[in-house]
Length: 184
Image (cartoon, rainbow, N blue to C red; front, side):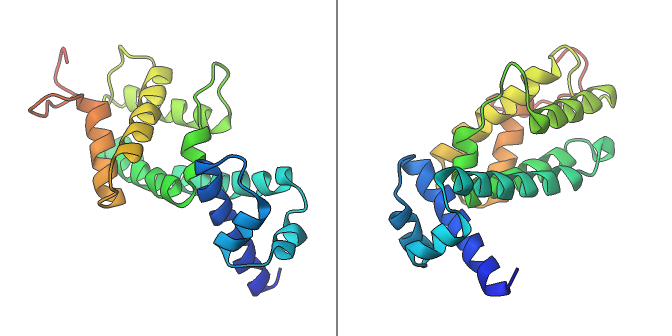
């Protein structure tokens, strides 16, 4: 694919992800305007709404898979989780519709399955509580991620990630408690 076409496609996907988060019925013209391209350019790459939404899903999937692939493991305790959540925050900022449309399902998809496995690994490593199911930890992470991203003025992705991880691991306690302390 030519570089200019790739740049246009990226701009279209990012614009669609922003606009569809605010207005799921956003017009192709509005998306084209936000991307800085002609409507015909949108149709050339994404001839249908389904193709455009598929392009957004593919872009989000690639970023999420890269974030999961970069996960450093539990040897560093919760630091790796902070880095992973920071990467997911960037995905949410770049593609806001991804956060709005993500719902942890009764039958989780491939992403949630990978996250649940990651949480189980953290439990086996002694970093995360074992008395809370990994599925619940995953649901809690995304509920807090959605709430924090929706209610902050996005100081920095790192700060948002720190807030999300802190809330998931320690709740709203005034003093941070080490989650690895016996009985917590």
